[in-house]
Length: 456
Image 1: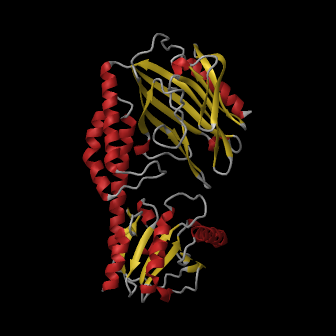
Image 2 (image 1 turned 120 degrees about the horizontal axis):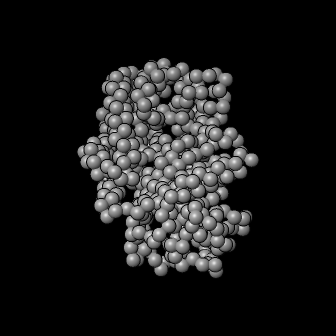
Image 3 (image 1 turned 30 degrees about the vertical axis):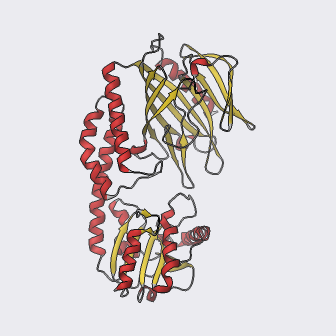
């Protein structure tokens, strides 16, 4: 009932918003603004609803054109700003294509985060390739879906083709597209996590022609941000981006010029988000640096870890060997790469345990403060360790040793935290976040540090 009321209200808003749009011939460059919602079929509709806006600069050419897009979202997570923009080309004569088949930066994405899972949801781009050739007989196959025209409907006063995208299980997607291939409305069935079904709806709220000056300014801004993303050498898409020192340096150098370039373009919000993120992460770096300076040189003694998995452990194990303490949540769900980099850590443990290296995974989760929750945490950690086939012991920080050592979460950072101890139990290395990965040895910085310690 809620979903029916939402749909009626959603369509009514769209009709009102587009009542004043011009219905003339297509311009060379247009600004398209879409409003959308994704809502779960079950559960609390307020808590499960994600609202989003997709803004598109549609730049047409004789051969097709380019769609420059940004996406903004609220509710159940938000993608990092560096992934909230992009560009995609469509080429006339290449056949019908809806351009939304995978979770890549070729099309806008939504981040959907719950306690049990993290999902990237692709959104259809506004232009169907060869959409101007659609007629009553149009059918095509794209990925797992087949598409066919089932009629014509009026959408915001425009006569649109209604397309169904379906598979053996039924209709997956319904799309209303105008005579030149622009999507006016879309309804889609989306499954996330462990089979949780959602309805995603998208509607065109604004369409206006862009002047030559506005078009040039917008494309210049998109190109500048795309060049920055290329320079940063990121592996995208991901749910979270943690900048290294070199990347932060590049962001500092380009932040103000990018803000200037983005003025009066759809990239303004992206530029503001980038500037804010730079300030937050720079402050976080300073806080983590202070914790590192305080921790290095201290001797780890009597942390009171509780063994969860592996062979016998006591505090005496932290002396006499080179020791790595890997503080992380060790949850079995949701599972997402790079899994705290435990795979590379396990590689080091297997390779150097006979030479005097000891590795301990340390479960650091807020639930450990409640003794009644520890059994659940223990089961979760054991499941994860079994899933990853870890060779090193997993213990739990049940007495809050990390707080005494210097919890990076207090500085706004996130785990994992890698702490290396020398043979006397003294901290010689404190690293928050992920290491850069080397093909030959994995976590090269950590690997090289261990070899130096072996040589002393």
